[in-house]
Length: 227
Image 1 (cartoon, rainbow, N blue to C red):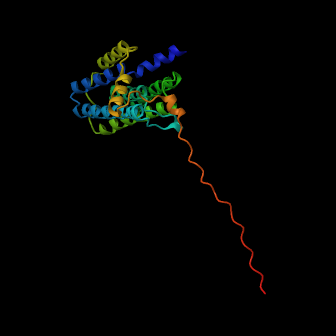
Image 2: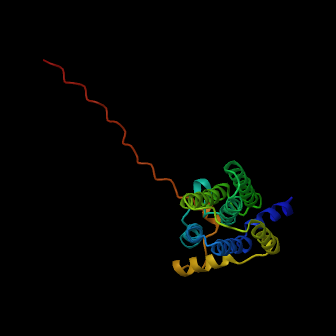
Image 3: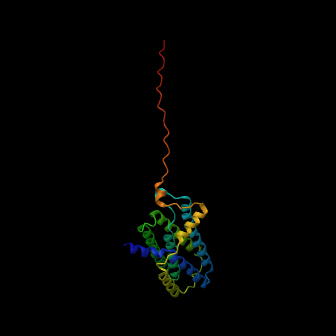
């Protein structure tokens, strides 16, 4: 079963999704869809920065949310939730609206499967995979919003789809040491020699605040008898 989840999770690897994102830029530029190309560059870059910062803050300073086991946004989930729905959105741009939306939703469901695989492989917690979906789908929604007034780009749909599919399958299973790079950046910025680790960080829960002792109530003196 683990081999199945590894196969799914590899579709979200930066080794696959970043080249796909770059290829998407080239296809948009070749179609002279300048606004869409620069919107994609800006939004994809901004989302990637959010993911990287969340990881650096934990690895370097131990900043996370223990209550929900959150140590940073899942990069695999983010990349999958960003790249595949946008590819579907653009490839189906000349189809009627319902079919375009349906295809994008199917691609988004595949992205969610990548998030599930990260949890199944114990690479991320549920909250981290959900965060990856939220950031990734936000990028997709922003891209659709910013390009809503543009004419449908004159993309060569079949060659584009074929080239992206070949690129995806060719790179599937490859890896890049993004986690090591982010860890190195976190250590340089924080000045630490070792990064924070999830399990030791979870074990060091902050001690509860000491209870304030309450002084016992003094007996109320009875009134003196009237003579």
